[in-house]
Image (tube, rainbow, N blue to C red):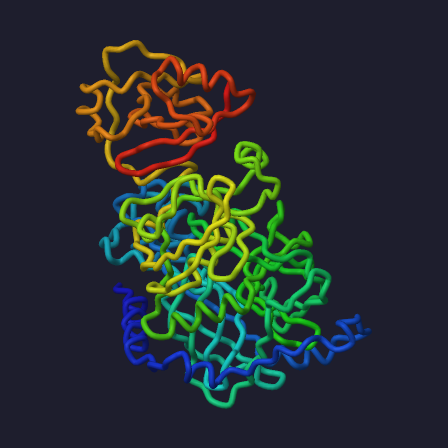
Length: 530
C-alpha cells in the first residue's frame, strides 16, 4: 500500500510558493493600517475592554501546521515490538498481514509473531504531527504575521479565519520566515478580510495595559489582560528546536500566554498591535505570569525584508563584544557601567576597516544609545548592509567617533561562539624548550621563542608570552583561553616575559584582564585569578 499524500502535499505547497505574489515594501506598507497616537487620558485604566476584544478578535486567526513524522522502517523494528509499534501509530494489523481474530496469534498487548507480509521500506507511512498556533491578519488580502516556530518545517499550513460566529479555512503559503527573531510572514488567498491596526511599540511604557489574543490550548478567540511588566528583555535563552533566538528585544507581560498563543497579537488598550506573542517563562510549561512578545516595530522590519526573497539581510560589524561589568568598569576607571566592550576585532572586518580596536567601549551607534552588548548587536542587525554608521566610543577614557560601513552578515557568523572564542582555525602546539610559568591556576605560559613562533605561525612584530597549557576544567578554559594564544598585555600592561607575566597576574586580587593575539585576531579576556 503506497502512501503518496505527503508527496502530493509537498508538491502542491512548492507550486503555490512559486506562484507567490511579488510585492515591494512600499506597496506592502500601503496595505497596512497604522495608528501611533498616544493613549487617551494618559492611558488611564477603564472598566471594560469589550471594545478592544471586538476590534482585534476578527483579525486573529488559528494556525494548524502539519509536519511529517517519519517512523522507523520495518526492518529496524524488533519483531516482538512491531505489533505494539503499528498499533501505537494507528496502522491497522491487516496492512501487515495480521488478523486480529487469528487464534495462532498471542492476545493484544503481548508479544506477537512476525508479520506474514512485512511492508517494504517505503510502505511505512509518514504520520502527521499537527501543531496549533495563532496569527494576526495585517492586510485585507491575506498577509498574516505569526511565529517562525509555528510554521517551521510544515508541509501544510491551514488557517482558520473568523467569519461571524463561524470560521472559514484556508491553505496558507510561507512568504518568508526568520528563525533568529522567530518571525514569519504567511499569506492566504482571500479578499475583504479585517486587518488589525498596527501601533508603535516604541511608545510603550512599563505599566501600560495590554491584552494577548489567540488560541491558547486550542481555544480560539481567547483574550487575556495584563500590563507591560518590562521592556527590552534580552539574553533570555529562548530556544526553538535546539536553536537559540539570536536577536531579542522582548516586551515582558503578565497577560496570560499559554501554548497556542504563539504568533498571536499583543495589543494595547485601544486594540492596536504592539507585539507578537512568542514565549513564556514557566517551570510547568503553562502561564506563570511571565510572557514575552516581539515588539511590532521589530516584527514589521523583518516582515518587509521577507517580502522579496523570503530571507533577512542583516548588517555585520565583525566584532565580539561583552557587557561592561563592574570589574571592567574598575579596570578602565569609568563610573558608567553601560556600553559594549570590544573583546575581538575580526581581520578585514568592517570594524577593523573603521579603526575600531580591542578595549574600545561602544556607547552609541547611528544616533542610538548602546547600554549593553545585546543592544549593539540588535541595532547593527536592524541596519542594511552598506549602511554607513557613526559609532561613539570610549578609548583610554577619551570619547571619540569612528565611522563603519556595514557588510552583509555571513552565514558562518550566525554560529554561536562562546565567551572569548573565535571561529576555530586549527590546533595548538605543545610549547617550547624554555621554562614554563604558571600564570593563573590551570594556565602555563612560556617566552615566545623563535621555534614557537614558527610552530604557531606568529608574526615577528607580535610580542608577549605564549600559552602552552590550559586545564580544560579551569576557569580560564571556560572563558575561552586556548593553547597557542599569545598574551600581549596583562591588566593593560605590556608583557615582556613569562616571569613578568606571572608577577602581573599574581598582583591582581580577583581577576586578570588579558589582551591576546590568536591567528591574526586580537582579543580581550577577563579570567579569574584563582
